[in-house]
Length: 255
Image (cartoon, rainbow, N blue to C red):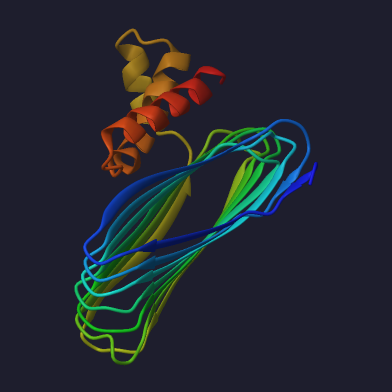
């Protein structure tokens, strides 16, 4: 419809196949976007899935991505959010085969009165597989971020490794973030971790850069770039990495 987009994507990869997918959402004006993506990975399949949410700042974006991993399959997701008045990226990963991997990573850059919600659920249903989640956010003005992440390890899922990390950088004393990392473990031979941090720019590092003749505005941008660098480096596709880095640089240039 004119003011609404209800999109359903169905992605099914055959045995041993490998693809790279870039999903991009942009627009102008006020509208509502509701994309749902269902992914099924057969044995040995690999999907590198990159998503850019760069909607109008008057738009509403609520999405769900649901992926099932068979034996020895690999799912790598990176979601980059900059747009939307209110946005929510929900990811569900269900690991159904041994030797499989699920990596959910992302970054969000918000300013003004934007609100960005990231919700993840990774379910380990069998033994001998791994998962990771790393999300970083930069929030300015009155922007607000939310991270809700859960790793659920079922009773038969022994020898599983699951890691989760959320970090947020607050550039304004009015910006805020709410984090709720969770581990639900019903097996005894596992290795799991989770953590969440938020804070302001390091004043000592900012002073050090200024003492070396770097103007404060430039020093602040350097520290923000350094904060984002490691999560953006997790993008394995060089072209996508350069594209997302250029978008981050444009956002910082507007500060």
